[in-house]
Image (cartoon, rainbow, N blue to C red; front, side, top):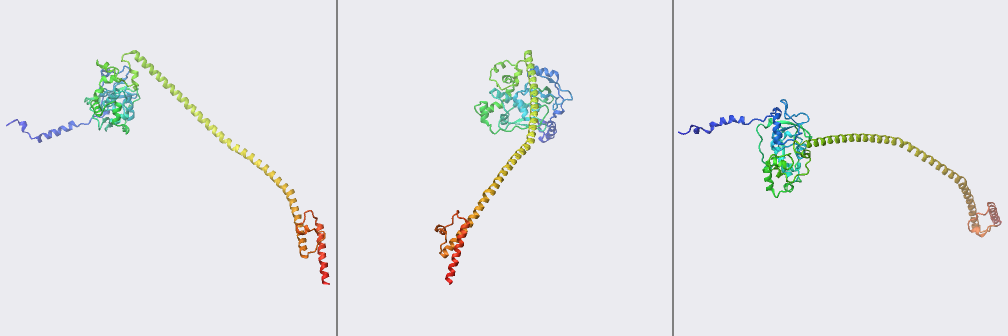
Length: 423
């Protein structure tokens, strides 16, 4: 009849399949619920495999410690971040990206860390530095409900390897000597630059076309291998024989943090030089703080003196104005007194004399006008009256008494003539 198993109806297997679904769909444990499995022996393996500097300070988490809450002065590091290309000290590009995003180192997932570190190595291998603008043009960093950060790109096919299953418990603490954010924070998405396009990325990376760019990012995981990390100066040494050959490639001169760790681990001279530089840095920072405090004191004293000077000027200004007003008012009074005296003199002397002269002249002129009128009416000759006086105004030199006597004689003569005609 055949195999009994082959005669089963497919629908009979469905309940069994449904019962297995809840087992596969399990929520990932939260970072604040997991105890670390890293021990002191793990640090020996980490130092050998990932080439930690000798002065790197690490700490094993206690059973009460969690990944989201590292001790003060420490940052949480997952073991998968080391396999994704993270090395110490962290690259300056990674520090800038974490600072701009407002997240800590442990919030980066394996995909986000491997892509960011791979792009950093790719850009350095091309002689340039990865900026946050170029990163946001190539893809977008986003976070899930728990705050873990990943990477997504709409136009680039970036492939990464998944971490091991027990990654969430493989965490430890590293002393924060780089100013990184220690506690988990909310992701601040990087803005997409409108002034950078695909052509600009090709020009920056010195690639011929988009196919070359797609090829580089599709196999980006190869850039987080130890050879490339050592090639661009992110790793202090490489364990493979052909790493020295890769070292001859062009390095990026902009990298600053790796200068303190240029020597191989185990070199006492390198450690002493590093300690000396750190001591000099601390001393310089203390000097700068003292200078800033002294500058603040001087600025405060300058502001105080400026306020005192302004108050004094405000107090002196009204008194100066009053004195100036008094001087101008006194001068005005003196001028008015002189003008009044001049007016009085002109009125008392010249105006009155002129009025008297005008009155006398007016009387004489009126009298002479009357004489001329009589002369015209009667036609009689007045004794002592010259033809010029009879025809024009009288001279101002003629006396009033003389003219009055002449006028009386003229009127008397006219009366005698009237009497003769009546007789």
